[in-house]
Image (cartoon, rainbow, N blue to C red; front, side):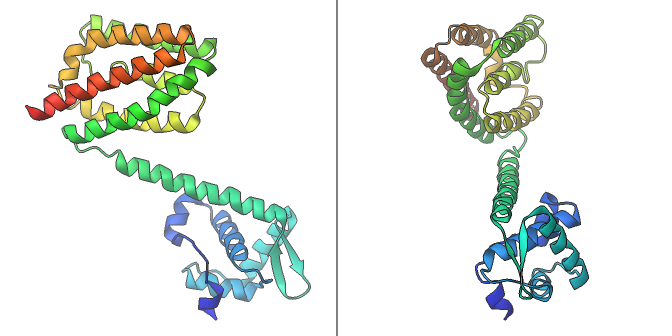
Amino acid sequence: MESVLTDGLDIKSVEELKAIFPIQSELMEYLLIKIMASNQEPMGSMTFKIILDRLNFKVGTATIGRCLKILDSHGYTYQVSNKGRMLTDLGVQKMHHMERQVMEHSLGQGIVEASKIRQNDINDLINLMVARRTIECQAIRMAAINADEKDLKEINWALVQHKKTVDLEKHPGGAGLDFHILIVRASKNRFMEATVKLLAYEERNIEYKTLKLSTYAHAAAYVDVHRQIMDALLARDADLAEKLMHDHFEEMINSLFMDLQK
């Protein structure tokens, strides 16, 4: 019977889910809704307990019953005579919402793992820059359209700070990254912004520990490129802004390839 009940039940391990739903009541709510969505027949507390035991989530039938009553009160489930409960349309919507939480967490973990750069590994830094180029060339097109006055002022402020850093000959690690991050923020795409922030954080980590990158020799030239990009944004010229950003990344990536060959 257990195998029949869990047929089609695509679910992560309870330990993985605890990172997404750290409060036990929320985790149980997700599990019960997920189980109901995978079985088209009304289900009672004992049936839920069998499945939860199989998933290694140990809880009593009384606790399950209380959680089901809470789901009823929210309008997510309804009682089918004495046979058990099923999801309402609102419950199905709730399931989709919680599934998105699980998916977003999984994607975020994947990005974190992919962005764990090995210190001083220029190959990984090149791959990181290629990923940034892909995102930022699209983001700057969106920023040229969506950026408001506040966004443009913040981007220009970052440009000024970048120039000061170069003029004062301070350690160039991370210089100019704020300029890029604020452009992506101005695209109004929060997923692009979150990804670029994470990549920029990892880039800073490796740059502060790698003192001989040839990109540092071009720091002053990059300030000039950023000024050209800023001017394109102010002119709302998406095509020019994208071209300048693409060429900027190409130059940085080529410089890293030169470092790799040394």
